[in-house]
Image (cartoon, rainbow, N blue to C red; front, side, top):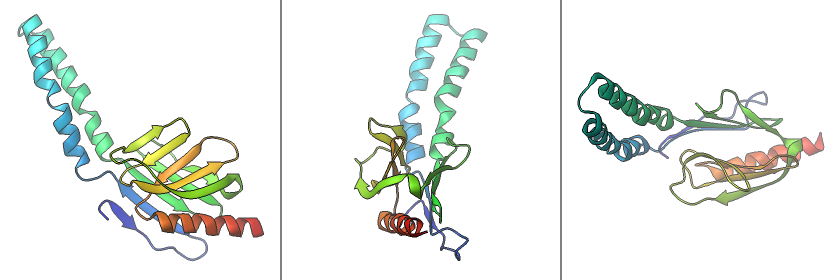
Length: 173
């Protein structure tokens, strides 16, 4: 379970379920390998057109920053999923500044689901939002209002059980 940290549930005041996931270890090097070829191509194009001038070096430096700067941001992305007594909370940092919450009374359906391989990150699809740092499997949450949410999990059965338990308990209150 690379990229996952498990924290035990704390007494009733704490979370019912909590999981931290990060991007797969190969993700950062893969981004570098895919981005790096753009730099020599840009150097050839810019230097061939402009020659070596202060302006061409500045343009080349700007291209390098634009190509390489996002890599650490994407490589360090983490999803924290928490099931509490009142609902499900999740934060996909650094893209979310604060937690997103779905109260149990908003949930109409929840089921275990699977997505295609090698589609990592945060994305909007035609049916809803996907949050997937490092897992093909996860839980799909359908809501009364708003798009569905897919939360990738390395422990999808436990996450589904925690949400179903929370739903049952919230409906008996």
